[in-house]
Length: 294
Image (tube, rainbow, N blue to C red):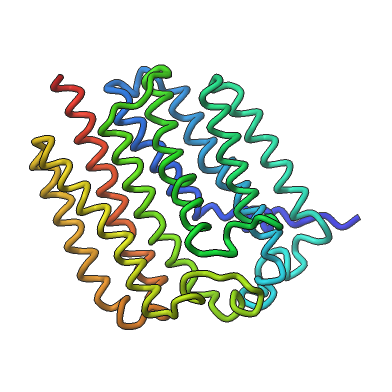
């Protein structure tokens, strides 16, 4: 019986993708508690769950159901290259999902239900016949809700002892979920040809590269503008200015991306997106300061 290589398993689980939901969970946690240091076990278990477990499960699921597309776009990926043989890609996705549920059982009912919802979205995103990712509008929305909004709200809820997050926290979770739609579109520019052949209607396939880039930029920028408006309304001008400066850096980098989206999407992911997610943390501390001041 052929077994997968340990390094191939790690590649399948894509550690580089674990950061966004872990970051969102941390941002939500900051809005939910003034004293995270008093809830460190819950905080670190939540980080473990959102990144190395649930997000990793979603990556394994996606690679299994994308193995035919990857054979065209990325033939060196673990499954099409044969480094993960047979049905081991599916087995790993199932095992990792079950481990995620087991870990979630230590976070109480709220943590467990949030994990179930995240895993359901992960499987439906990739698995036929539903396969959200076959439509870029729906698939990117599902990812945005799961990676950012759900992780944020879960962190806020768990770190506040099970209380419903306050209105500012919920608003920010929703807005940054919308911005994640644009971030997810960045990943689609590298796979246009394979997606077109396999019937995956990503935004670059539906709209063409340049229009998809424009929509991606709008999805990333407009929610941040609304965040700045809200922070100003909440009398948090200092935080608003910081996010504004971060947005200026994004706009500067977007100029090149909009001219050459296929060539510059990866570059913008590496240098522009970190400015956006830095603003998430700034906004989270703004909400935290509102609690401190109340």
